Image (cartoon, rainbow, N blue to C red; front, side, top):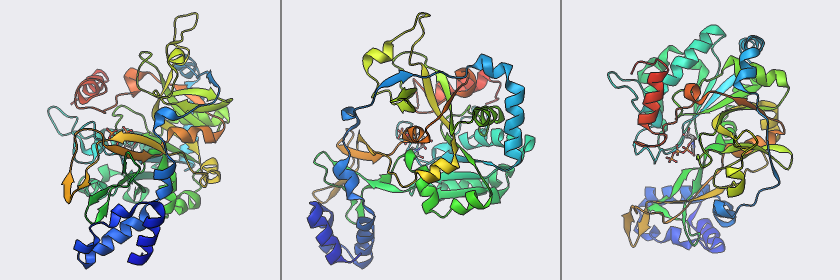
Length: 405
Ligand code: UTP
């Protein structure tokens, strides 16, 4: 993009502040800034509103296949799952592009050491699980989504540990797309004099970014029909779990979602429900208070199925819906930015970042199996350094599950 083109675009969008230091920059810095400006999707900034204002459709509870039923039918689910894996129809996608700001660890979150007496990173814990399944069935393709900020360090780390002995040609790293951050007047921030404040565009961008990075051929040339998407920060989760795969395939649905019984009404997890008769996830901040606390005749929460970011998606529907843009959610954040010629790092929120969410993909799938898992065995999120969903609570659960730390 040339200067004149950028200037005209920014004038039309009311975002001229992005060129305010242009005259002070050298040639390569100017190129950098113009390249960043060419990447900004201004419509995100103009059209997205903070999440509080979002209106949802008619909400009803959903039935889940319970752990009891799963235990009864375990063998047949397992057999189907293993067969599907052996046929090479399943891949995994690790979402590792987040900024992990709550944890306050300034390296890729997967490199966080959960060990107490030895080094045991989150990536290693997850790959132990993957290696077990690969041994039972066959090695499957794994897509690892990173961000511009953590990509090189993530790839270097995997090389340094020799990909945990997993076939390297089956692991595909890619960088996720970005979205701009802005102030409360929707003016896009500059991160430095020559960089626009661009951050990862949320975990909902995983499939579009994967395709944009040219990895669609891996999926289509290898006949992959299902992708198991999972978060980097659940250290107990099962990846490409054959029982889960089998249950989803046998049910004939387009999506499977692992869910846990909510621990309490105000637990901060999204809930799988029916919205206007379609399976959908309502985030905790969108759920009306009266529905959050509603209980049935057994005293159980009516809206009790909390999602843990472990989904199985049908590739055909992902491809069919790829052009329909997911909504962007505006989140108030503390954003480092340029102010009067200096870079400031506010401690308090000062504007918005915009993210698409993987939870919004579920509604597109049309059908979804809610698959209950025991939270003590499969849900140990590492979101914070201490307190709820922290390193401490996750370590406790790892120890309870017999994992040596
Ligand atoms: P979170 O919603 O917990 O976000 O991510 P985060 O950025 O990791 O952490 P905080 O909010 O800054 O503390 C849930 C999962 O989605 C991935 C994360 O890496 C994690 O696996 N994610 C999130 C992405 O891959 N990209 C994103 O842009 C956001």
